[in-house]
Length: 394
Image (spheres, helix red, strand yellow):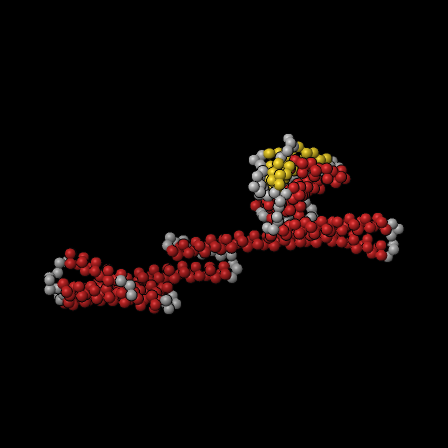
């Protein structure tokens, strides 16, 4: 049982003694009235929470509390009037005014309870709609009290859930697109491989060695795709272990230019490397080389025939690698995914036409594994930049 009502009774008793200054003979009676009302209020404060918890409506709870409070007040006034022997006329006036005040109080409590009940039902209805999947549901309540805070919390939760749902839908769509593209990339060499094997088995080819060369080439394509998928899985799982040794990115870029020169010649694309000299970072030479080659290969495949792909390597608050081509550039959705997305989102997307965009995804993951970042710059053509901290891994 709470002691607060007894404290309030003692304060009221002291105030009564100071303001009214009753006769010494009346003081015990006054003390008994105040302490008795304190005990009655304490008992009510112990019982009411247990009773109101069983009520089915907040409106009933508010009305019950109001009735008990007013009944307590009426009892105190009636007892005081009896013991202090008010005249009959004064007693009747007091009773009428007290009854009128109680009635007005109940009307006010009913109005407040009704408004609270309506707002709580709106809150409950919104919560049920959200639970049923309607993430656009909002409470619409504008209040400054705790009920308003709860409404704003529910609205904020619904907005966040809606954002998560949109992102989840986008990721599912991206994953489906990615898997479809992977299936397409596998289907082409597999179909060619099957046709070549069947032709050799049936003895229908005049030059088996040429078919064996094609079979070997298709197996290399399939093996490379599977290796890339395995590497992507390691990147996404955070299980990519990188040795940390001094690596010259300018040298890696020069090696990439030499390695991709035959592919560039077939497409009539010129490769040009611009670097002032050594640009050293600490990291995995093999993985950084793979990232640079992926970016260059992407540029060669998408630039215009007879154009140039420029590779720039220099120091700029770290080691900067920039690959620029004269192709159609990157669509806005690809820019956004590279800017805000993570490697786990898959399908950064190809620049144009089909494909998986797997090279860009892997390059981004490898650069981020070195503590760097990759982004698409504005400007004509395709412009991809990479920045790797020169103390990466220290």
